Amino acid sequence: MSFPTLSTSRFVLREFVQNDIDAVFRGLSHPQIIAHYGVSYDTRDDTRMQMDWFHQISAEQSGIWWAVCAADSPDALLGACGFNDRNHEHRHADIGYWLLPEHWGHGVMRECLPAALGYGFGVLGLHRVAAEVEPENVRSSSLLAGLGFVHEGTRRECEFKDGRYLDLADYGLLRQEWRGR
Image 1: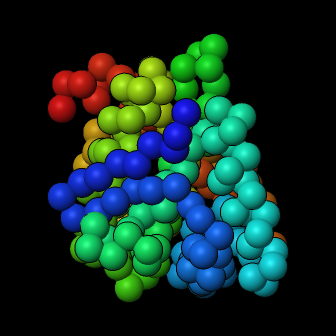
Image 2: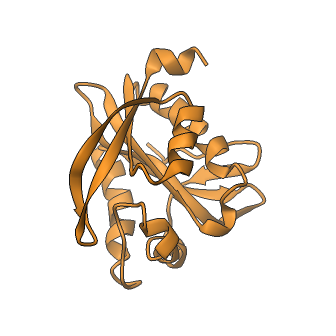
């Protein structure tokens, strides 16, 4: 099966290609992004692990991540979004996303995540999609709430990052809640 390309009015969500490595490294080494993101890389060479992961989860059917690009410039990466930790038996997956800071505040993920969610609930047959957000990341929490995700609770000091324990807010969206939107 070929990799699914998704489109919105302004954006294309496409498969990652090796030419994306510089933009992925830029994103996953950018202090503003990695401040609230669970993955980071120190070198471009290290970023190859991330590029391999994008292809590995797709091949294993344990997830799928898209390169987010402007429709009029599909070779230039703006960010990424997708599903990982997909559980086929229970029909759920985690959603994640990141965006280069110069594109923040322009509704990119507000437009792209519904396309990904539609694919997840439709083609992948998911029943539940979950997200974890550091409570300080107010923009991400607001984005999820605007998409219909429900704040289900906060796990206290459940992750250790940069020498300190972090809380993680758990969000969930069920298929019937998505269909009702």
